Image (cartoon, rainbow, N blue to C red; front, side):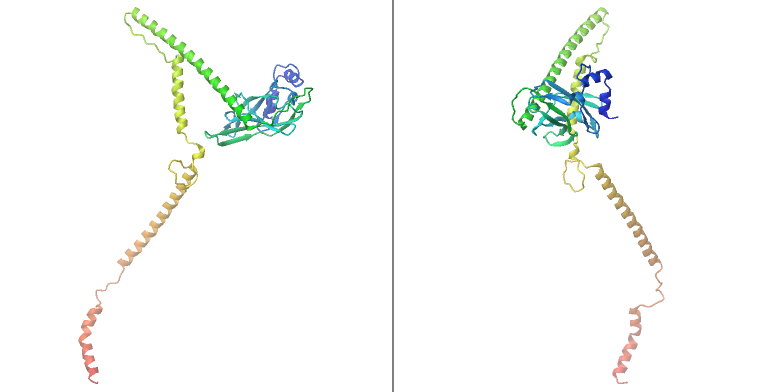
Length: 338
């Protein structure tokens, strides 16, 4: 059974029927994107809005969270759409909720979508970029053709075609809201830390009074479990994580060849295997060369040991010396006309 079917079937039967028929069920129906990138739209959401609607309909989309080892909920999410008149646009969700293998986000249907009736095509894109804004990974769902904008009686304005500036404005709005939430969380944490410090001070004062009452017996106050202590630990942990993040090696920095001359980049494990193979081949060649050298040295030694004994023979110089007088006499006789 697909992820879409599991999510739809997880609702109580009566609630699902009421919601599908437009009744007052307790569970709101969601659009679902399953593990096959397929987009499933419940019947009651196929007419997603009426001409002239403005920010009155908010559609929740449940999307498969993990894809090939990547957590898509950490990517930037874009809802791309094609309006009935052919204009294209993008909506950037301003909320991300994570739950096990699924994450959810909302699509507020604004007036820039509902000024024409007809078919509304949409699909989801998730992008991950580096600190320089360069694209690292991108994931897309299939397009869905099931939704439509119903005809209404309101004669409404026709907005200008969405520009890149509109998308940038949405992104800035999302960033601002995230910053505000972070600031609120920090303020809350500081308040809790302050209250914990006050409690620790009161405990320390009580310990001093107990020490005095006990005739000088030492009383140690353990502050390690206070919120303040936890906050301090979290701050240190965050600093360590930031340091590790700064020193980590990015995948795109790993070199997968043996020709690069860069001195500040790591070599891939694959090239380590290549280098090991070269070393093994060199060792094999050296071993073979050593065997051949040993064999040649053995043959030279054998040749030296088996050379003939020339002690019983005379040398050419000795022979010439012995025959010298005879040769001279022979030359004299020949010269005398014998």
